[in-house]
Length: 119
Picture (cartoon, rainbow, N blue to C red):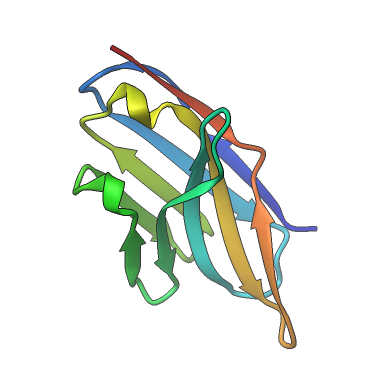
């Protein structure tokens, strides 16, 4: 049973930094992609950033150089360092992992961690 456990969410003032982290466990297969999505009330869940096992990275346009994603393949962890946060970044942040099980791809989600940015 694959599990993703997020940590590090919380409250921060606008302009401040915050880091969220996620650890995956329970997979015998390699985690190909790890990433972060976010969802604000009334909105769809949007990609924030994702990183492949080979280190290639995709950022959403709204990140605008403010966020940095990193992962540790040996520990199956992914972190998102967020700087220059604005109230528009307030959302529940979800960790995502895509695993190739030999014949199929499966996506897994964490339970989400709340990030609140006050003005």
